[in-house]
Length: 102
Image 1: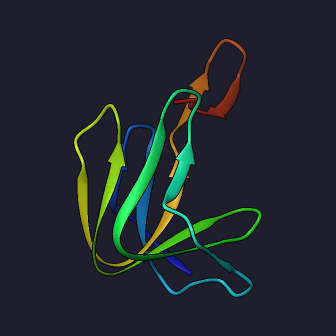
Image 2 (image 1 turned 135 degrees about the vertical axis):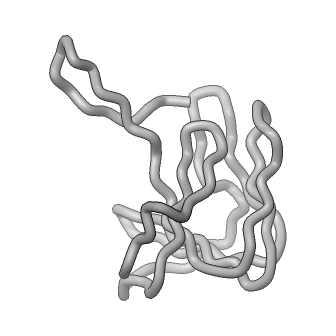
């Protein structure tokens, strides 16, 4: 899988990087829930499929889909495959890197 780190979308603390190819062993799931934060849900609507394993989520958009987050404007994305990632923050005092909790 080739990840294009210069081509991505963002809703809240969730990033969606455009990818080429898909790893083997992913399982298709029937859901519109992309991410459950502490107080917010990230969802998707439109013409899409979601494939996951224990480590990653790939969203494949067949024509067009809309990423939704209650605190932000909806984001329309086009055809392609996208890798979901969570924004990370660096605590320089504790010298730790961790995912942001939305």
